[in-house]
Length: 116
Image 1 (cartoon, rainbow, N blue to C red):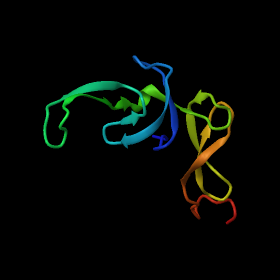
Image 2: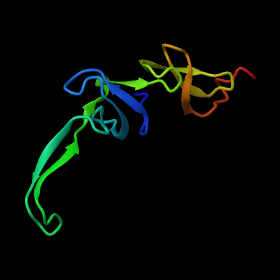
Image 3: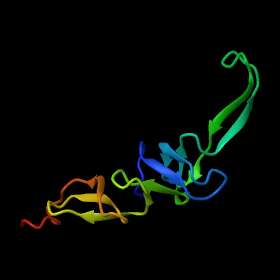
């Protein structure tokens, strides 16, 4: 999974298809993430000391990671992402449409560097 929190993603399927939003939270074990403004539902809340008003609370629910695409910061298009090793041995994400790098995944490793 090459999506992180604070990334901008676009929903590609479902009721909110085409909506872009920021990733708020990721649950890697379940393969889901919460995107700002996407998959909103109403939760009915009873009056209590914590919530004296009660009523309907609107909140975002998780979306499958396979239902979103990362927005490339350079070309601005939703695209698939890949991982590649750089010359210094570090690993980075990149856009498969334009080839631009979009952040480091792993720090440099001695075994992968070309300068042995």
